[in-house]
Image 1 (cartoon, helix red, strand yellow):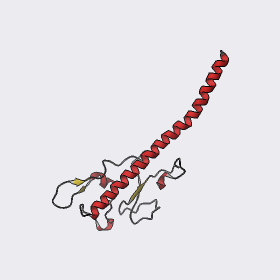
Image 2 (spheres, rainbow, N blue to C red):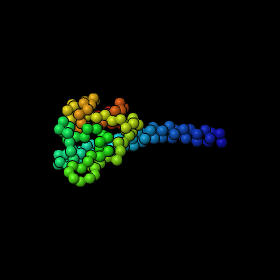
Image 3 (cartoon, rainbow, N blue to C red):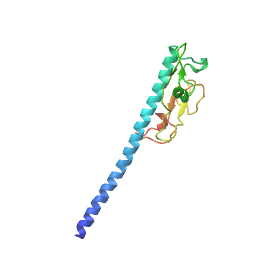
Image 4 (cartoon, one colour):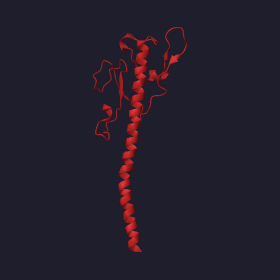
Length: 144
């Protein structure tokens, strides 16, 4: 009886030890999927803003190259050009970075280098995570 109890406890211990890393990886993988979705959503919003500015649907400043001045502009909306009343809104809200837990995203302007980690402030051409972590595939979250 005691031997059976010890054997059962040993089996449970082994199964628990195997399941814990799998659960941790699953949580991390779901956060990575959320990060991919958030980045894609914000980049698509930036692209829609650029298309609308190129088509003359919204007023733009000359030095912005038709890109939004910041992420908050995509949420607040831009007045429709002409006599129509209303605003084009591109995002409902700025999502939280699932890796850092904040809405503080890294930004790149059109004038910045492609791999720059400092924002020039002229416009928002691209967005990236400020997390210093490494993904399951070995890449840095900030490089996504």
